[in-house]
Image (tube, rainbow, N blue to C red; front, top):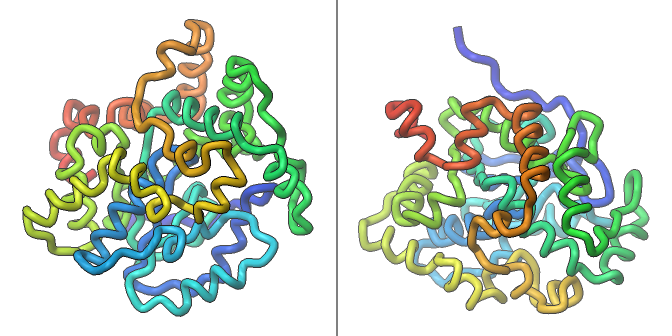
Length: 322
């Protein structure tokens, strides 16, 4: 008997999210959706996929062709028009759990995962440096739903306690004031057996980008020579993307300059892991372990921390397809 397909069962609507936006997008076979929790490598993967789709043609800016569909906007029509006129394979971005978007069998999904502790460190940098003017603009949107976006303050430990122990939506228990980090990963992990869902881990992109580029290309049915794989891997180092931030970033430079003091250089911060080791106390790490037990299955938790290495140890055959 065939296994059930994912079904949309939730709406994510708040100051930053509008899951109903997906209802305005007419799907096409071959669409590509890159989905992550916040600060997990979304833009990195967008840059990789952009090069795979366009190959050696002149590349457009990420912000010009690959929109974040479920971001709350006062007017969604420019995004709909942007996608409607595209003749190449469309590349879209989402930060929603699988149960909050309409699953399409003809779409290729790429789920990028990162250790929650590393996500936290980058999210802290992202939110603690965000300008008051931009937060005020978000909170005064006529279309805003629910409570306003809170300011995170100046205490990283207070922010951690809220982020790891509280959810924004009623079904979440971590991720505040964004959506759940672990909830997002687990929702997609539950359907990782589907052939149109591919998991890629941030650690693996750091350790062996060429292998991950080859896996992504194969998932998208894009043929690449070994030379093309190596070239794509070389063009998508963190350093290369940061140096080309105006083209590689998720928004135009002017927009980023309004959000953060250093603009896109704040968005592309360090691209490293493990900074949490010098920040989080044993008591705070115990909160993390409790959240893992609440939200993640053991195999998903192991993958979140170690990437494909965890799968290779647990199930070598399965690891080849994940």
